[in-house]
Amino acid sequence: MVLVNYRDYAKRFLAECRDSLRSQTYRDFKVYIVDNASSQESFNYLKDAYPEAFVIARGDGNYSAANNAGAKAAIADGAEVLVIANMDTAFDEGWLSELVAALESGASIGIAQSKILVYPEKGQKAKINSLGNELNFLGFGFTSAYLEDDRAIEGLPEIRGYASGCSLAVKKEVFEAIGGYNEGYFMYHDDVEVGWKARLLGFRIVLAPKSICFHKFEFSRSVKKIYYMERNRFLFILSFYELTTVLAIMPALLIMEAGQLAFALLRGWLPEKLRSYFYFLRPSSWRGLLAERKRLQSSRKISDRDLVDRLRGGIYFQEIGNPILDKVANPFFSAYWSFAKKLIKG
Image (cartoon, rainbow, N blue to C red):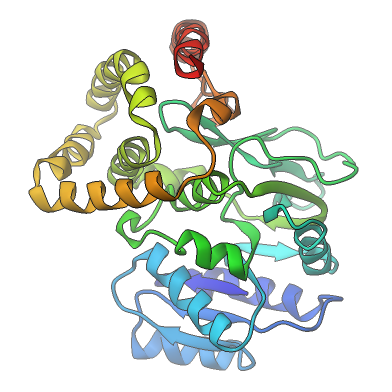
């Protein structure tokens, strides 16, 4: 399995994560820690704190490249299943055995995700972080069932959107078929693009509800990365969607961007939002995007008309809920998406 350290993450989170991995009932696995802004101090700390793990040093902080580096090392050691997990986690003792069992339960299953619970405060019951993530047609990703009470789930439910990169397993042959992580994404939307590449090739994504992961989730850590979140949302739309889909959503996309700009101005992150646009003014950006689009469109086995029902019209996530989103934007975009889907399906 692959864990990525970034700066002080290991000192904050590794001990409990490591101890829960040492307690797994499934024993046949190796841990690869990618030290992703590596210094001699951080490298030495990881070696001392988790001596049985393999530590890989990288310097640029590219999260997608770090996962590729860890996966490459695991595959070279003979791994048939690749597990990607956050370091700010703790795992139930049956987490890995249930996750691997779910992945290997069917030839069509390419990716399995754990049931991810928000790490409970002392004396509190665990709440759900994700039962599989959902994807809005304008490229916004969000978790499902967020902060709902934990509950028993039977079977291996199909995940509507994509598997959360907090705790997922992917078959080696699927990882190789999709080309691993697109390192151009750097961070954020990395799990969206991995999941949707698997979908384009016809693989299923399922929830392993008895594989329990506790996530020390902090939403504020995510909103600091507006540039990557917004830039990568456009990269996803422009590379993954068929031309008919891009044209069908364009009016809604322009309306959303007008609203996003106003919201960014009010919240003080307008420079980061504008920076995400400026990225697309560079010829090199378009060369990379068009090359990836050509690869995806030529290799896909599933068309957008068979995927659009997996996309949501609205954005339903408690952390970003507000009256304008709930009462105005979501009803409008949900109605628009119902109309656009009919155009895409022909």
